[in-house]
Image (spheres, rainbow, N blue to C red):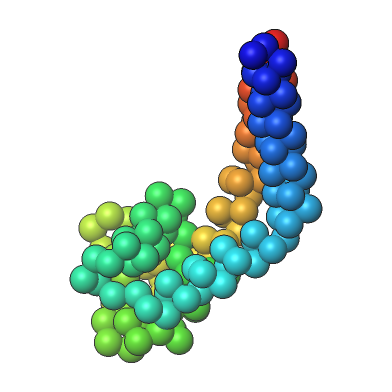
Length: 137
């Protein structure tokens, strides 16, 4: 029974190791996938509160950014042609940006999200390695 337990722990360790390697190797595909999905969420954005629109608002208001690469990404959307920029793009909380680019954040969200992910990658890798190694003890 003890040998079976040891084999099971080794198998779990190998699966975690393979997952880490795959994540590292395909990190560029993960970036591209995030960018494409974020662009798609911008195109389909509406103020009725579907989960994608809510995610876009949360990212933009938390990171103080607007659009994918910059605020001009919004100009190609149906939402912008109807209502202008969303409130989550505002530099201040009490603004109604409509179509005034001076009232919105200039920096795009993609770079900010990727910077955060890359800066925290070492912490995540360290914790994952620690958990993987110490479960075999």
